[in-house]
Length: 120
Image (cartoon, rainbow, N blue to C red; front, side):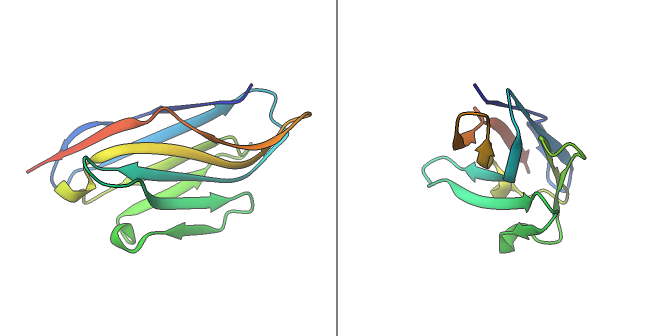
């Protein structure tokens, strides 16, 4: 059983910073891509950023230059450093692990979500 556990959300003022973490646990052999999505109230979940197993990153335009995604050496923990936060960044942030290989499966997984609130 693979689980993703997120941490690091909270309340921050406009212009502030937060770092989100997401740790994958279980009998994991390999994770291809890890990323972050977010869902604001009344809106659909949207892509924020992702990083592949070889370190290639991709960001949605609205966070470029403000957010940085990274991954630990083992490849099972992903971080999202968020700076210059804006009220429109307020959302529940979800961690995603794409193409997670175990001895018996190859699946995608989601974390439970962590709330980020940016106050003005």
